[in-house]
Amino acid sequence: MQTDVSVEPLDVHNWEACAALTLSPEQVAHVQSNVFVIARAQFEALEVFAIRYKGNIAGMYALYCKHGVMWLSHFMLDSKWQNLKIGSQVLRYLLDTFQNHTNVHEVRVSVMRDNVDGALFFVKSGFQILGVYPDGEQVFQYSWSI
Image (cartoon, rainbow, N blue to C red; front, side, top):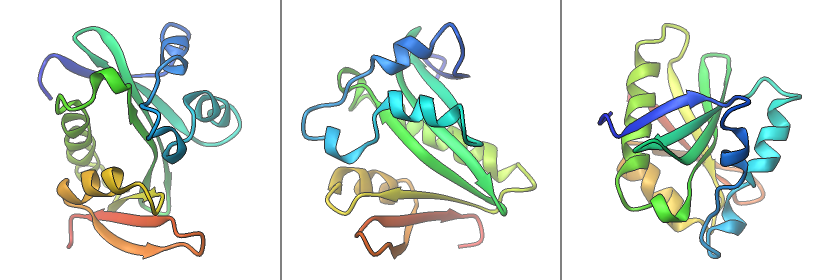
């Protein structure tokens, strides 16, 4: 990643800034709220990270690993920090990190059916569609064996 972009675990110093991040009105229906994800992490095996850009909290993501599959269960950038390639840099960093992790053989993410921009972001990053849940949510997979 460029030195302007970094990630750090969610903690007492950054959680409120992450909770305050916002999406554009058309994106809100496609992504769980950050407050909900932060609350989930208190009760589930979910690791949450802040994304910084030039020292500012710009986004956050959440992960959990199950049976060698790393699930990217939340990935968002505040609307004012979008279209700066921050998300692409963070995702590339994550994929490179997971590739070197012996217990992870693929990364998956689910995207709501009508979230065309979200699906396109992951496809451009090398993910392939794996399937569709009955509610229409699409599951994308990144595997080093593909």
